[in-house]
Image (cartoon, rainbow, N blue to C red; front, side, top):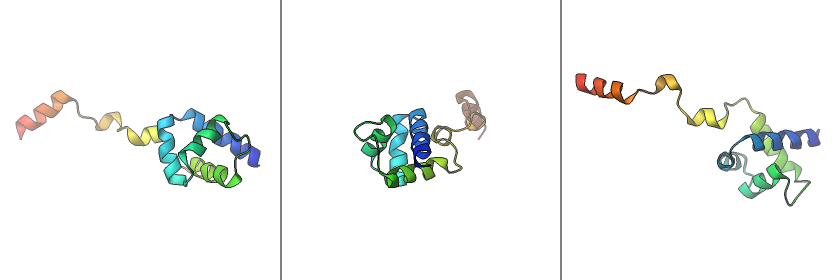
Length: 90
């Protein structure tokens, strides 16, 4: 089971942008360098289970992907022209 968790964590981290890893590291308490090493299997081929488990539970949680949380939905963005019209009426 631990090997499946490690593979899952690596796949999820590699699918993310490296800039998003900082938020993952802060949320899980795992150092950014460790997140990098786990994602690319550098230095340690067998990382500690506590780090992998922390990342696994965080990534497996039912959350929107980081990219979707950062970007506003297209319907909520007001085009510049419409914004000018709205301000002119007020």
